[in-house]
Length: 188
Image (cartoon, rainbow, N blue to C red):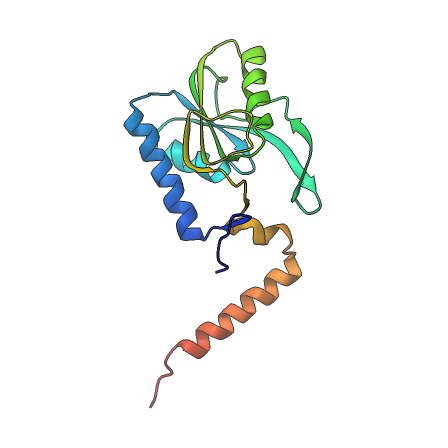
């Protein structure tokens, strides 16, 4: 694992999962009750899924994207899907909007505006993210870490951004080879 600095925050799978769980506890301890979780895809999918399971509320998904340029490292134009995906009904009541991080704050701000304009049955929206960067134009209602130095956050799933199927096969074969060389062999 690479060391984190003011410019780069490296997050392992264990740290990532622990952060989601800690954020869920923070929301729970606030006493605020919500009827649905709305996660922003893609970064909010994993936290949204965990929140939906822990709080036993329906999960809704809204796709929004701005990090498409230069392999996902440069913020481009913001695109918000017109529709929210959910299994039944429509978005209503108290909604917890979940994402992995708030960087500039523009996505969070625009999505909240979109919800007000397009979903009149939504009575209240609060937001929860793992990381809140200092450069953000807004603060989420709940966040785990405030990052004043605005580092680039290297999340564990980013390896899939540049991994293609043929590379995946080679990676899995290499892991199998390591596992088989680490296992004790049976002696007659």
